[in-house]
Image 1: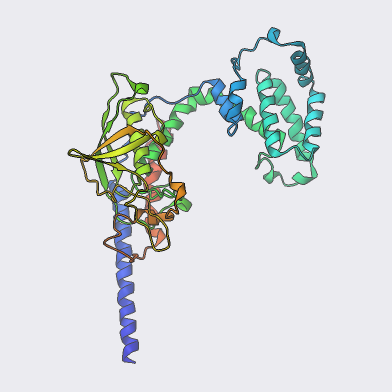
Image 2 (image 1 turned 90 degrees about the vertical axis):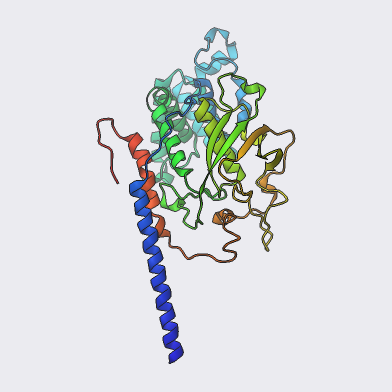
Length: 403
């Protein structure tokens, strides 16, 4: 009887302690929500608009870079006089509505005409008819009506959910062609600013490098809630001069804020983005072509996601190295240099998944101990991310939304 009462008393104490911790976490979350300021960087760099040719190629052939060399002439200006008789005859057939609709239906009935083949056919057809959008629209009307009348499409809500037919890919391409000018002239820049601002907010908190879940997110399904304590580390980053970027106006010494739980790869991405925001143009190398080097006095140490110092758990899983793993402090100098040789990539290792990748920071202090947390404690993080989208998406005459 005494043991039962003692056990009940201990359970009550544990529940009270848990409730107290939950109240504190939620209270702190709402306090952060009220006090947090949306620090939007004004210098986003040049909006990376593509010319129409490359826009069309990336839209029509997202997975087929090999087709780029085919289109050597401008896609807007094609002189019909340069075509030979065969192409002229083919063009006449394509412009025959009955013939074209029949060909499409015949091809789709072929068992060996795969989904990939249908998408490629639709993309080539869109390029051939991009200067005849009225005719292409009439073809789409006929094909869409035929698709609706098929017995397999008795539920209208399920139509066009997958790009598995020629008409579905044609419709996607048609909308892209029609919207290309609108995206460039009207909504392209605001949308780019919106995405950049959201990325700034997301990068203020931990992002799981494996699952891509984040502490600051708009979607509860992508909320990272098993997060240890983390802190911001201000780095002094020095970019090595490269022939690809020799402009005298380029600033090569930049202060970059990272988190102590960021992996080296995540730190690279933030450093690249900081260079773009500072100079208005990207660094002359790709992300996988550069390395990071910690400079301490006359000593240098290369920073890698996985090296000989990486922690390997009992089950053989390797933790990715973080800024905290290398014990990098505020004001440390990091040099960005061009790699000479290719280093092993992380996919050659059994990498630690989910939020465990962040536990390098406090692994020594809480070895084997996991603090019990409830996902709902972090729902305020969803609210704190909302202003990033609402402030950029509102009409200039509308008042700001206060949370």
